[in-house]
Amino acid sequence: MEKASMGELIRHYRKQRGISQERLAGEICTRRQLLNIENGKNVPSLELVYRFSESLNVDLLETYNTALKHNGLNTHLKYMEIDSAIRTKDDDLLEVLVHDCEHREGFQSGEPLQMILHAKSILIANAGDFCEAQNLTLRSIQVTHKDYLPSDNLTGSYSVAEIGLMIAYAIYTCLLNQRQDGIKILDNVEKYIKSIIFNAAYIFEHQKPIWINLWCVAIYNEFSFSTSAGNEILMKINDVVDYQKKNDRIYMLVELLLCRAAILMENGEKQVAEADYQRAKVLGEFYRSANYFSKLAQKIINLHSNICKFDVSFPEDSF
Image 1 (cartoon, rainbow, N blue to C red):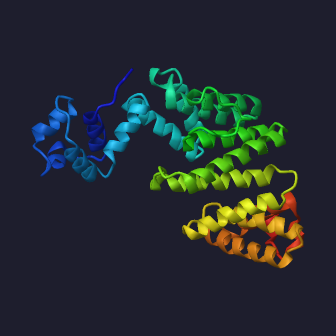
Image 2 (image 1 turned 45 degrees about the horizontal axis):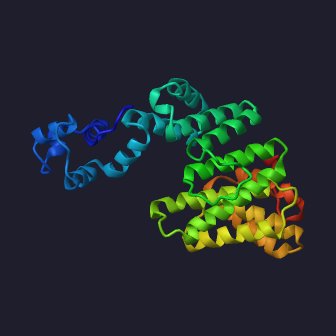
Image 3 (image 1 turned 60 degrees about the vertical axis):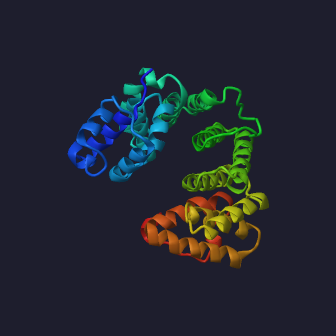
């Protein structure tokens, strides 16, 4: 199995940024020392690693540890390309990367295997085969948690990536008309995320926004797939909205405010519902467009209420 070295990591980021050895060495060390480090003849001290990190604007130590988990630098770099293609929803590139990587040695175990299975599940789901996408997602989770079953309560230790996979599995389950099972998984995930955010002393600050994002996604999908959205979901929305307000975050806030507006309207709280709708409208039109917001509002509110109950008007081209 390929192994990562700090020297090749430094060389990779130096070349990626178009920096010569002389320039990077600068006042940190001699060019000869840097050459020996990059060639693996010398191992840099922690002080040198920190100074190179500052010059290259990358956390080399964290990246090195991640590259080790990803079965080496080359596998890690491909892993990051796949992750980027998923985030940007570039399915054409994702298909090329999966074809290129799925039989590589580095992608046969651990997190890289998990990523390949996840990527394949996305491509297959896009083709409409939710059953196979569900199977691949479960296999992906079981790469690192072999005893995991979707019906289980989450009592172990799971990464943000694994929680994301559980949400994806729940969505596929709902799309296969097994909504009760899918919503149960989303409820388990939501409880686990809250336990991490509020109780886990070890959570890294730079990971907290990702956990909050997953929290929002889990609640939004529970609202979307529920046959009726009641006070339990309303309480969950209130919790995540209030938490984001205290932490100056607005992830999925437009969607969550619209979800809450729909529930409140059905509860007969018209004035409060309309206030949430107007807050969502201001945010939605500020960050996207009036036309985009009107379509989003109809899509979300009509799941559990009726947009016509709100005192709103739509531009002609919104339908």
